[in-house]
Length: 422
Image 1 (cartoon, rainbow, N blue to C red):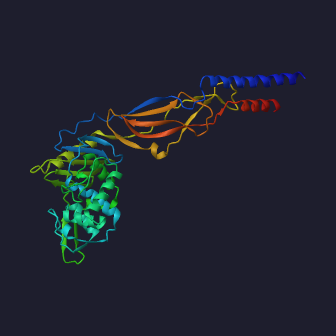
Image 2 (spheres, one colour):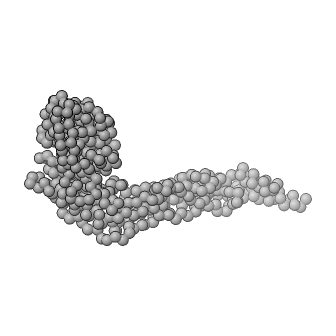
């Protein structure tokens, strides 16, 4: 009899404890699941590899050095200033042709294409050519008539192809680019002047070099072809002189108009680094060699002052208290904590970025001071993210590693009676 009385008293006291605990939480407004987030910051510096030097005074009005792997701008000079880009336009013309038609397509020359100004292949109206042959003409010698013939074949008209070019530019993340012509000749339409920025042009080249056929075409030194009738033969030599100036050149395209000046965009691979360089307004006649000097200076700067660093660092995560929470192991009134977990793909852990000395990768861990029950296992409760300056490089969610139920009369009664009878 004595044991039953003691048990009954225990049940009553436990239920009263539950009621008191829940009432206390409610009184403090602890039912809200929205809690202030406090950032925990861990800084990671780049490895020691020499103080970065300035690339020096450049001739180009606009210039960008870009990491070909990530698209990050490593150096810029008026990189987001809109300017005409002349025949560097043809990088976009070529990649759209490769993506929208097979190389053995027959391209018939229109009167409009044949009437384009120099530099041109001098095709005649009604002639037919393989599309693939015309792409060599386009990229190796920058023929204007070839560009229009390709545009009309792919887009139905120059205007239709220009729409495709602008749509593609937007899809690649270009923010201030407008195409009017497929060959880069200065022109204006209702959308504005034909223009781009050094940053946008570098983004276009970064995309283009992912295409193996594009690389094969632009790396070719000499190419011979004929029209479909076989009556006319053509031999062309690659105008990209950088191929003979340095090793590791993947691709490049020159350009010039009286308005744009000398322009150039290229991609090079050295010591495991893929570097993209774009130059706009890099001198006017008689300064044809300025673009090569600027390019070599930027390649040297990128090669000597940037090294790959692994982004990943193991985050240190603390347990978080769960208010108004109960578990099988913890009775009401006692503190309940939940561990934090995360899942990051292995390829993300191996990810690297080009950094120079003094640059810092900052990992910000955003977690609440406390949580309010209920909490479910796998529920997102925060985030960890890596930043380079103000730019977010990548992030991943932080989740609860176990479930925590909310304190209630029903839970208390069930737990007390379970303990009493078992």
